[in-house]
Image (cartoon, rainbow, N blue to C red; front, side):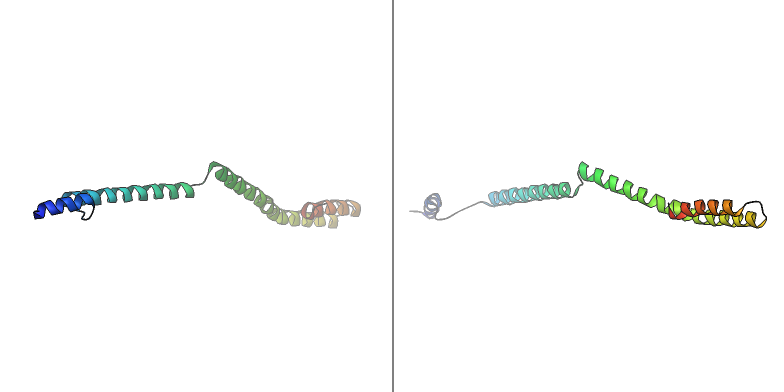
Length: 119
């Protein structure tokens, strides 16, 4: 038997695997394409997993709104202190001038203090 015939019979029996250069390049290209496709699918899945869902976005927006509302009373209470202090000073001056009685002074002073500390 000739050499070519031996190689042909061995390759058909599975003993020798012969692939041409073109077949090897084609297989490599297909493997590369499969790898690129799998990497693209993985990247897409990772992006999708990292994207916030609508429910999470709504909860985050509600939490931000609640935080802003909670901060508002603290901000509005701070400027009231100088205003109350000025009003108390004015009330004291009015009492010193005799324009407000001691009873009126005590009543109005308590109202002003209640504004700051609460009832």
